Length: 233
Ligand code: URA
Image (cartoon, rainbow, N blue to C red; front, top):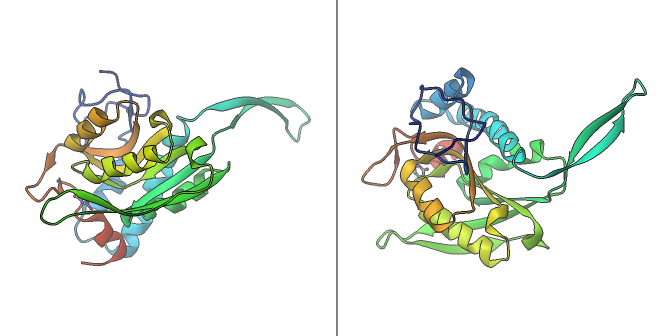
């Protein structure tokens, strides 16, 4: 299977070449990104630092996701009076956060996208006994179906909540090929589950881990993202 341009074949980190296909954009595993991921994974990192590093990784993820979008040719005149043949992004982007951790990536999208932007929210929770995800709340903007949707969810473990989110977004009329899942850390299992259900989806992630613990946490992982971002243990 082929790997997209954002992956640089570094052997550092948890990613194992061959596990991906072209629908997955793994950020280049350079030393700077790996050092940021190390700070997130360190259990002693405090809430302020965790949030700041999330913002910086979020900027890289949004930039890689925006590279997937269509654009059109445009000509501008620079201060020297010369014409420059450039491009202009054309998509209308809607960021949909899966609460509560997904909200941590909203600022990066606000900073990164200068075109038409809106936000939606989904509250999905897993039943303690059945382990099945239930959708409790959804709110989408007007003309949602015509937008490119960036699902904002820093952790992809079993894929249960992610599938429920994509089901809700597709039921609201968005085409699967117009959905990009933006993620900081994915388990290989979760990636397989997502693409089995949604073959036209695209995923942008900063790191991939091989294992899930018996309690369905990603391993080595970084713990409960929401607890670490919001300081609620
Ligand atoms: N969600 C988290 O916050 N952490 C995990 O390890 C898995 C899902």
